[in-house]
Image (tube, rainbow over the protein chains, first blue to last red):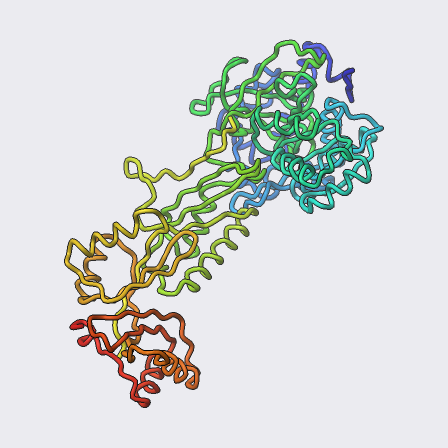
Length: 433
Length: 143
């Protein structure tokens, strides 16, 4: 039996959804124009005023927002509500150079929690479930989002946060966790750890809600087989709220976007032109119910496809495919956003040349980040301990910048492959898309 | 009294050492001694050659990263206990040996040790005061 958190919304008619969108978009544009000088400027540059926006059809007249805008406007430049009305911030994962801070009023958090509650119930969750959240808590939206959603459903919530696998498994066994929320790679790792300890029979999981990084159908199958659960994908981004922007239902063929809160468009990443449903392009979101941090036409850089075919689950909201790639060079490693430029900054700061290569691979369902760095006469020493010490410093600096561990490999000068004079910077060996 | 050792960065990959040896071979460089210290990703190849200047120029042209390190070359009798005597002197003098390696030549009564220490001058002073024979660069080149 299909569970819904807000059936009247999740299964509303298309006309009703469109009516909500039209009304809320007009209000949002009006409010942003009046309260956010940064976006008002962008609108003026494009010669568009709130009067031009009467329905969702007019959305394409509005200017885009990008991550660069969010950085330029850091910290308060895109705030649309008085700071005194805000009760929380969240921030994107470990990216010193590109940190993005999003603000929430209590109402914003309520709506975000609703979105996550929909995801939990779509995965079969009810008030009788034990929801085990091992997404990170803190600035990262994963933990707080699913935590809030679980409260709304009325499930018993285990705010485990990430790490300490022994403790995770212990609680899972002792408290009978039924729904697991974490990154898919951690789910796969937990599955293996449970098998290693021979505790399969003590585990009562029935479903998992996994997101924050790309994962393949093969990986889904692997996790489902090992944990004897149904594994559901969830999508979100801090800029738009966090997890729960879209989520999978029992059909497992794409994620329903919560269209009463977010309008989705697919654009050609090169021209910005809006593409019809079914075509592959960059996903763009407009948040139409947020008070503190509403973003209009925010370019996610995720490449995917939207489909409006009728879903067997009964939900009427548009479905997005799993992201099939990025329109920029951002990598998601262990659920953390990594930009090659961040690695470059660290290398240059530490005296290494900007000749480097990043290899991302997946071993035992866990992401691994390797950085090859070319040795130079300046960094060379006859003493292995001196070189190792410098290498350790580099590893520590990368950890501080990225928030995750990177293996550093020193290689001979000019040994990194160059094609047409330009180095191939990123090799992603994971078969994610 | 220190002699010049060339320390070269070589990747820890099949064939890398052969590539390096080929460069030396092509240019008729004769190695007196060789030692390799390895890590997971790379090694430091330490060599004593007959013509350090020519070798350095050659390595630079070939794109190798290297450094020239002053080390001590000590001649000891090729018999049990002779290394111990030298090491005892170092110990008494509080000299830490960072690394060392040995080589022999056609001279059958004599073995040679290369020592890398922190303070070359202090080590030279102690060893010469105790009549330990140190080789000059010229002597080494002519071995």
